[in-house]
Image 1: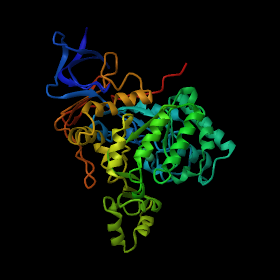
Image 2 (image 1 turned 120 degrees about the horizontal axis):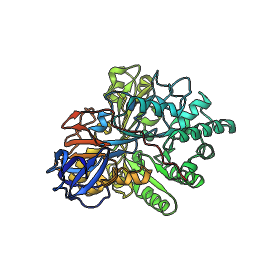
Image 3 (image 1 turned 90 degrees about the vertical axis):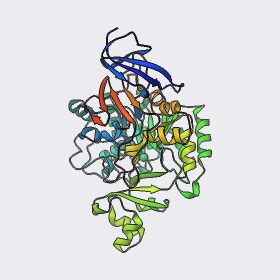
Image 4 (image 1 turned 45 degrees about the vertical axis):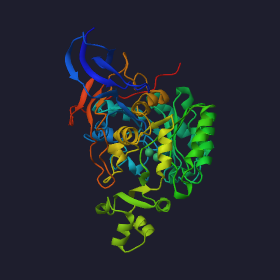
Length: 480
Ligand code: ZN
Ligand code: CU
């Protein structure tokens, strides 16, 4: 057996959720070749992992990294957490295929002037491949992007039959080019008028590719139960897996209702394929919109085009400075982004602990003052929730960010440490791993992430980034 690298003496959390064991890992080329006692084997390079946990590289199931992947330096936020694969194109927003003439909220969360340059999904994937990407990426198509392409600014209505057919065709061509799935964001104004029939018509091609339907649901507050029913029905009509994005219960009046939603999700899982993800914080982050302000106990502004100097201040502080009330301040700051403190910690913990819940950051890489989830999500699960609070064992934490995600999302040969799989690995200190990004100071690297390997290459070691080109585009294996 010829090995390039042997990682010796670590505690292996293999991504399956099983208890850790002592094991050496042998790598050759881009793959894991051997797992077990390799004391008799030799390799060109030995890595001493004594005292460290060795795990599959983490999969960030919910990202808005469409543009960050093409922007040098930006994926450090993820690599420094041990993330080796991201899924992009969430919440109905994707950078491709884009033929719209201008960028409207919430597409401004990922797009920017000069970035509407991928008229076909194939152009986007080709750009990723040509430029090289820091982590593996599975890229989805966003419904809101398709709506903006086909309907222009006239989005306050359901799409016509002709428009649905245009969107359906753009999705189908994108899936043929390698798109991984389809997302909607009916929560947001430009997609709110899209009804179930529109979504089912547009998303029809998913079945042929067995690709998932991923959704930022219409309502995560008082209407959350109806939104779940709509999501399940769309999944049944399409015959595909549905993924409930960043499951949360918004608004003080609804706190505690994760008991109800998780029971309903569990019941649906017995009948159809349903997945869900969650980020480990009790504050959300998205565009600033006066309509979202009332649900939150406090709002922190993350960016503002007219008032860039106010990023990082609370809406209340800014209202004081501008001499107006919160809602007027919100109007004046737009287009802008915000963090909304509007969830109950007990709901967050209940959702995180639900056995099928995957971990996704929902980080906003282009925000001036981002939500700390961008830099802290994965170490926070390991350090804060698993180790310090004991919400679940460390092997469960690893499983929720690797093996579970790969299995649910259909990512082949990743998410587990086993012979034959791609060599995506993270080595971390189980006693000290911890997020360090805070709401007041969010762009801070986590502690305790020692090494990250992607496709057999060591890309990050003791704080130094060694490569931004080891990642690969992950396309969906063709369905027979
Ligand atoms: Zn979302
Ligand atoms: Cu999102």
